Image 1: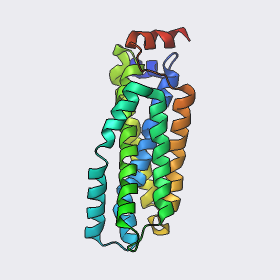
Image 2: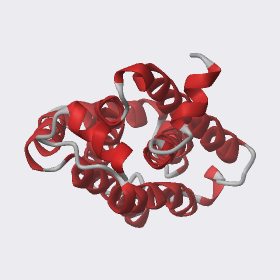
Image 3: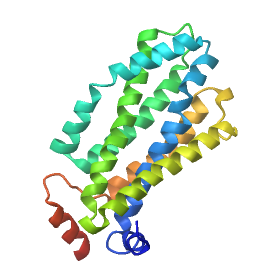
Image 4: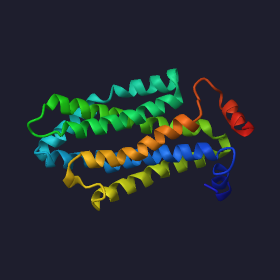
Length: 216
């Protein structure tokens, strides 16, 4: 990654899409590492044993696998931009929904697995859509730089999310609601950014996307 290429993605006409990509990647990192990675801790705090927590998470991840089909369909056949926003909003709704359920050892296992599966599918869709979108909104000469920044933003979000949880800014001792609310903020900002300023890439050649940005 050369510095002149880094400067280029932060200059017109690519600056807007760079910030959309960075916001989206950062939001996923915060949710994934500030909430999802701590789900075993949350579940144990709710009264589940370590073995049961792992079992519930395994089943949820397995049930979420068919969601990848929906991700591919919505992004390719419906709208890339709106699909990204939809899965971001779904991630927020699932995180808050799981927290609202206040899962405990007495809660319905089916309901918990179902909500966890939806959360895995939604957040998995967010990160799955980020890579193709990044590749589509940058020209060939900047595609590697854009992809690198996209990956870096998700790692930075993960660092902030993990640090926030570990240091108590998003405390696991208070249950799921506070962490769910706090990690939802960057995801909501990302959803708004992609709706307001994101590019619709479905059915448009890469050359058209790049030229369209240069005209604006």
